[in-house]
Image 1 (spheres, rainbow, N blue to C red):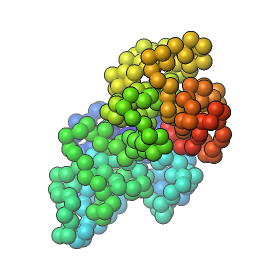
Image 2: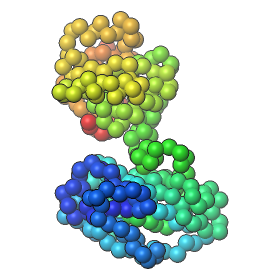
Image 3: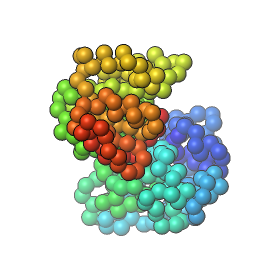
Image 4: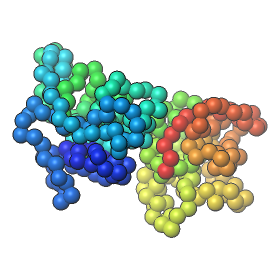
Length: 306
């Protein structure tokens, strides 16, 4: 789900529903009910003053826009997604918690409106994303310190820019931090249609890596398969197919994976482990490492489920 100029859903259960909400100045659907205030110094934001269920503690409020100081950047938010980490932060069970009251949202993309006299890294018109979590992107506009922002190209899709700072970064770190992979090596992962999974597919393809992608079975499995292959997936198989003995034939033409990425757990992670090459890494979703047979090594990584 997305938050932008239309912040009317703050008090509804739709907070957890995926939806694209256009920013002010963009074409809006008939369902959009919010229009920006005529007062440019007023900001509308989704704010929570204490932790709890998002539908109960998040409120749509008017905030005052601070004056732009020498090292400040005035940003108009273009789009911001709702990530599971955003929900966890509001609930109070995330590893990083901002000081309350807080504006929700860890990800998003905005456009620079004005900059302070000492700002050199960005200029009006540039697109920017948060440099770290907890910035509070669920608002129409804001004034941030320059160091809190990273400039990104403005010719990439809006949704890609708005989701650049969490899932793709996670995918990249998992691919490069735990095994010395070379072009031609293979990686196996489950929940491959998750946000992180799709990022893994695309980054792996760019690095010359081959991917075996496991997904849950569904009526439209061919549609999903085609989508993932269009992103760069080499193989797409279901959880059920992963457990079949004939799946080993897959590795007649594909080398055994040197890295496995798991965010499902249970039998699925066990099956991933069976196909790992010796002395390889399994990334698992729950905290805590466990020993692997045949000299295989493990480390840990929480990730998004499909």
